[in-house]
Length: 107
Image 1 (cartoon, helix red, strand yellow):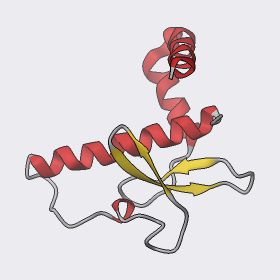
Image 2: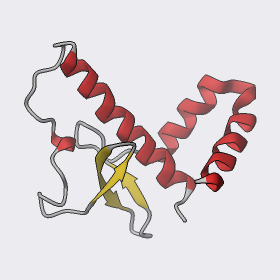
Image 3: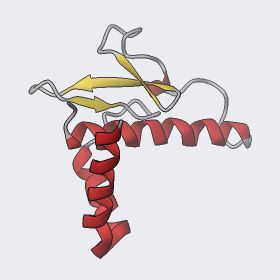
Image 4: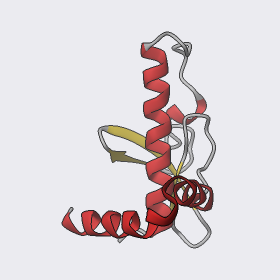
């Protein structure tokens, strides 16, 4: 099982890759690969995982938890993602979190 932190980090990383792909489609971002799009495995680092049709580069914490790497090549901090979700969903965050958990159990 993945930790909540791993899920937040990987989800943000795949969203970052999707945003870059859309920006390229619109011609807003040049087509040269960004650092996070080059697999860390190819760079001699960690591995990639398939998520929502994309290969997401990952790194690991000292405790062995997976973290996603965004399109800029930065490891995504799950605390930052969590704070963003709490800010956006406000008082509804508890309900949103429960829905995330139920959905994950169905997978």
